[in-house]
Image 1 (cartoon, one colour):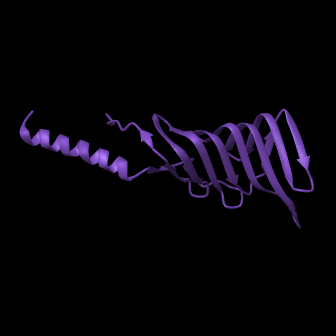
Image 2 (cartoon, one colour):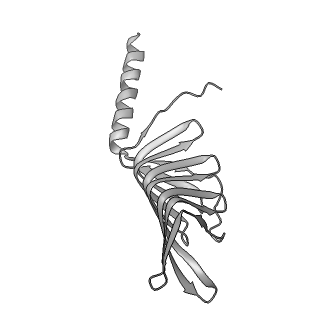
Length: 166
């Protein structure tokens, strides 16, 4: 290997390691288009417990939550809601026990997720894995703004960068 190529390769490797040590997060897109948080939230589960006084609904067993093109599946989902002049509105969806969220071709897995309906923000934690086509990104936390489709994976981020042969 010529000396210049060896120095360039060594420098590139050092740069990659320094960048990964400094930056513990990576930006991703999720879903590609803005999400409509005004869509109704549909929940299917094996059982449901509602506490009218606190505005809490607890769904357990094979829970599937659907809002437009957003899908979330988990062992348990807690939905907090409130009454207003227009009726009942969902405030937050808290999923736990292994969560899978999909939107279009994109998917994310983690241990827990909190979806704040009004802001359109989803925060997923616990061994997060994001899959977008052939690309995967893993980390400890995923924050997605469903209004823009922008997301950030943080906490010891791991991915494989490959050359596109097209």
